[in-house]
Structure formats: structure tokens, C-alpha cells
Amino acid sequence: MDYKLRKAEPKDVSDILRLVKELAKYEEMEHQVTLTEKELLEDGFGDTPFYHCIIAEIQGESSSDDPKVVGFAMYYFTYDPWVGKQLYLEEFYVMDEYRGLGIGSEILRHLSDLAMKTRCTGMMFVVAENNEPSVQFYKRRGAEDLSQEEGWRLFRFDKDSLVKMATPAEE
Amino acid sequence: MDFSIRAANVEDCKDIARMIMELAEYEKMADQVKVTQRDLEQDGFSKNPFFHGIVAEVPEQHRTKEGHTKIGYALYFYSYSSWIGRAVYMEDLYVMPEFRGKGIGKALMSKVAQLGLAAGCHQLNFTVLDWNKSSLDFYVSQGCVDVTASMGYHCMRCEGEALQNLAQP
Image (cartoon, rainbow over all chains, first blue to last red; front, side, top):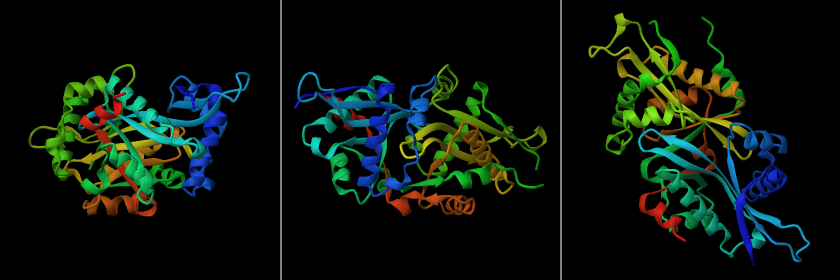
């Protein structure tokens, strides 16, 4: 099956949101997705994008059919003050029925190549420890588990805690 | 003790580089630091910065015996959650040992929170080493959640040869 990778465009936001929700469902977290198409549009295609996306699409059954978006990766650039720029892979998903065709590997290859071209020293991401297939997929490709090897734990302040922390204490 | 927090500028990179090294030594990973003062100047203070910084300063009369008045910093950048949108990531938070316990760390973190909220962020993320009990306790007391514990998220990295191999056709 022929597929093609390309940079996401504003018209892709509804497919991006669809795939985000599908992946969240796979992780049993669908109810946690509050992002909207409007936000994806403003945040990804404005003056200062917060994220970038590449899309995998396959040709329709006949030449008059629209191509179908079957996978994507969402990424942005971060900074490690010890080693410099990093490419952070926020989301990476290929629809179930289109797996095993090499789309995922090609997306990763494309992103790694991009990381090197933009002088990033590493590509970073987060994986849930119980997601065995994904953990193995990444470890096979040489990824290190920094949480396991160095003891890094990811901490988070949600919106309410963030607001509390941003309010100066009473003198 | 009197102190002030302000946005970092390019002249602060010498002190920031110094404190990055101090923090890395505290984290027992000083040999991993490759970024130089010049890298910080280029990466943080050019047209498209890869990070932002804030610095904590004390007045001259409280300077350290080496003469430093810049005694704490935080580095942060904007990130994105595919579930909730805009987020801010606090990469480093550090106060020199003799200035701890005075609310400076809390003030730095509060400033990052304010800046993040002003930019429309819904979340502040950062990492902590599992043996760093005093930091773990401080963060939990401020109301944050250990996402590694609650959701089993592990931080992963592909670098060096592994990254090069991945990039091969």
C-alpha cells in the first residue's frame, strides 16, 4: 500500500484531533482530551507554533478518492542545558489497521533525520511503562529509559495548582 | 532577605552557566554538561530562542564570598500536550545552597507559573531525581503530582549512535 509523509497543514486539524482521541482511547484516557480543533489551529499554524506535525496519508481506492490520514507525529523543540537542543516527540500514532506497513518506522526515521539536521543532540519522549509493545519498539531502536537508568520522575502541576502557585503569598 | 526576580538577559549567561554546573554537581552528573556559556547565549538570546530564563538576585551587601549577586535561576520553555494544549516545561530550578530556605525557589517557580499562565498554558511539567527527597517534598507540598508514579510514564531518550542509526534510510 502506497503512503506518503508530509508536513501538516491547517486543513489537517480535524484528522489530528481524531487520531489524538484514538490514541487516548488506546491508552484508556479518552476523557482527558480537552483540546479542540480551534486550539490546534491557533497553536500549530499561528506566528509562533507551539507544535509541529507530520502526517501519513494513503491514497484512496480510486484516483478520485481523497487521500486518507492514517498516522501522525506531533513534536516540538526543547532544550537540555547540559547538551543543548532536543527534538521532543509528543505524540506518535498509526491507525491499527495500517500498522505493519513500515509507516511508524518511516515517521521515526524522518524525525530522527530532522533532529540531526536541526542540530539536536537527542530525541526525547515519554512512554507508559505498561505499554509493552511501545517500550520494546523504542528499546529495539536504542532508546534509553532515563527514568529507570537515572531516576528521573516526571512531575506535573495542573491548571488549579498552577493558578495557586502563581498567586503571590499574602505578606 | 531582600531579593528580586527578573527575566534573564544575555549578560547573565556567565552566571547561568556557573549555576547550571553547580546544579549538575548536586545531581551527581557534572560530567554530562557539554553546553558552554556561548551556547547559552546563542540558544537562549537569538531571534528564535530555544529556552527562556529568569534570575534571582540579591543586593551587593549579601553577595557571596566569590562576589556573586545572581544566586538562583530557572530555565523554561513552552511545550504542548496533545490532550490539553499549551504547556510550560521548567527545565531547571536552582538556588545556591547558602540562599535556600528563604522562599527564593518558591518565588522563581511562582514566576514561571505566572509567565506560563499569561501565555495560555494549562500545565507546568518538570522532572525530579527520585533520590532528591528535599526537592520531591517541596514540589509535593506545592500541589503537584508525580506522573511517573501515577501513570507509569518513563522519560526516554534516543541520542548519539542510536539517533544516527534511526535516521538512516
